Image 1: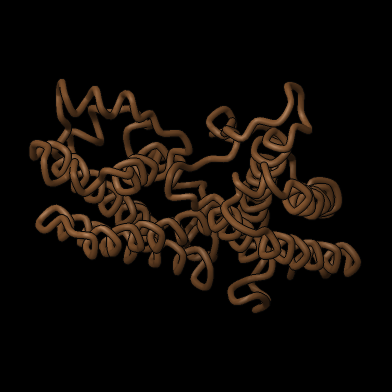
Image 2 (image 1 turned 90 degrees about the horizontal axis):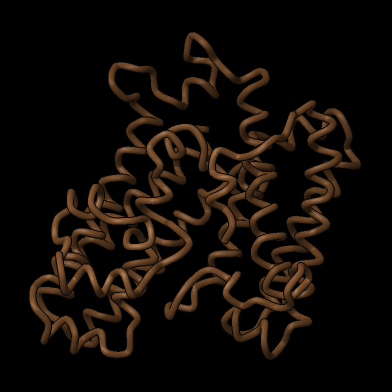
Length: 328
């Protein structure tokens, strides 16, 4: 955890603070330059959030942080109605008064990447900027709270990282920690392969459905996918590709062949993602064979993980705590 999970949440907290600052600067002076800076800060904040998705368990689930920071759907109509009728302009308003589809990075994306963003920020009432800044404050606050729970503990409890390193009295390191990591990987690959790519490509019932690919006018879905796969690889092989601190260290001792297949699947998946030209939804329509290649490589990864790795480690896989929420 000290080498992979905690640094991921540290990166999320730092990028969230930078995003909040750029949103404040944008609202203080709405210009092309400040908008471009805020849009880039949004991308920079989204990267560590999506890369940490393979660690969305424990405090992240307990706090229901996905609904505060990174809910996959956004509802523009509800956002606009709220801004007209009962604007949420404080962190507390957003946290306790709005739905998940009106919060998080998705809501910020909707506000930042609209064609008329600068006009709306310059000409509308203070409610739009108040809402935008409140969104940033909530993400920053939540990112820091998750990090603190991992590193310092909450309400007098031990740091959550202690349950993975053996420092806590009821350490999970021998069995439950590994099972938690593997189950989260299984659920995430299910979301990426079955809920997103298979549905978008029309490999499930009902034909191709581009709405299965999350995201809005920021067109960040391909980067999101790459970061999600990088996060899966981080948890499997360790930080920076291979440091002996990932699940691979256990799998390799049980089956070198399975470990090699997993490693090859990660590399092949990332190569396929990097070969996709343009935004993911555009590629889905104009170059579907490139996206099909991504699906095929990730499907190979999913099969090896769900069968060989799960069996070798004796992990029981049921339903995720957020399995219903993962229908993206």
